[in-house]
Image (cartoon, rainbow, N blue to C red; front, side, top):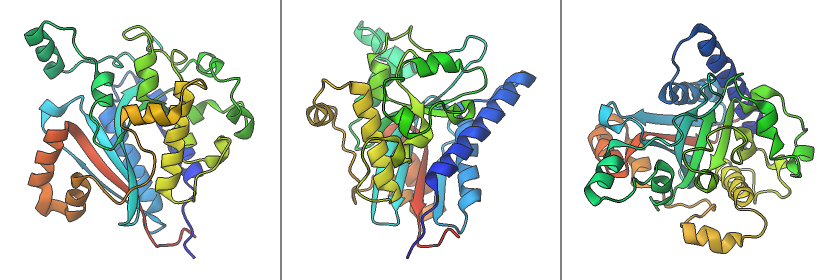
Amino acid sequence: MRVLPNYCRSFRQEALQVWLDMSEAEGFGLPRNEETTTEELLLSLARKHKGRGLNIKAYTKTDESTNGADWAFWFADGPWKGIGARIQAKRLFADDGAYSSLYHQSKTQKAASKASGQPTPNQCETLLTHRDGLVPLYVFYNSDGLKLSATLSAHVQLAWWHLCGFPFPSPDWGISAASALAIKKANWGKDNRPGDFQMIPWHFLVCPCCWDDRPADSSLPSLIGHGLQQLYSYSMGEDIDDVVAFGDLGLSFEPTDSAPPWVGLLREGREAEEALDEEMDRLNLKGVAIIEETEARDD
C-alpha cells in the first residue's frame, strides 16, 4: 500500500523556513522578492521528498515582460487526476506592515484603461476572469513583521481554531493564503494589511483536521480541492449559496483528468520549451509547476 507524504507537517515546515528567511533578509536590509521565494519553496519541497512519494517539475520564463504575471500549480495524483491553482504571490513589507504590492496594476492594464477611458481593471479582477479551470489563489510570504494579533482577530469565531490547536505559533503564518474573492471584497486600494481580509496559514490547504468535514480521500488533489473549497466558503460567508456562487465564478474544486495543455508540455521537458513558452505567454504565466504524487513509499 502506498504511504503518502505528511503534507500537513511538510507545509508547516516550509512556512517556518519562509518566516525565518524573510525575517533575516529584512534584518540585513536585503530584498527578497516573491519569485525568489516561490522558486526556493519548490526546490525545498523537491529536495525534501525526492524518492519519497512526491515529484516536482517547474519552469520559469526569463522574459522580463512577464514580471507580475501569475504562477500556475498543478497538484496531481500521478498522471491521472489533478487540480490546478492560479497563484498571485505577495510579500509582506515589514516597514509598513502591509502587502504594498497587493494592488499592483500591469502595464497592459494601464494601457487598456488609457485607451478606453475607463477605470483600470485591477489585478484581482483579472485573476478571477481567466476562467481557465484553475482556482485563483493569493499566497502571502510573511516575516516577524506580521502583526499576528490583527491577523487573528477576524477568526476567533471559527471552529478550526479549536480543531487545529489555537493559538498558532507565529511561524505557521510564514506562508498564508486567501481566496481571490476575499481580496476582491476588500476595500480595494486601502485594505492591504493582515486582518483586512480573511486569510489562513497555507498548511490548512492540506490539513483536513482544520475543517469541520473531510475530503473524499487522502490524495493530494483531493486534499487541495477540499482546502480550497473550504477557503472560498469561508471567504463568502454563511449566507451565500456556495454551489450557485462557485458556478457563477466558474470554479470547481473537484480533481479532474483534464489537465491544462501546459502540464503535458512541462512533462515533456526541454524539447517542448518553445511551445511551453508560447502557452505561458497566452495565459500570462510567469511560472508553472507540477506537484505530483508517485507510487514511491514515504518511509
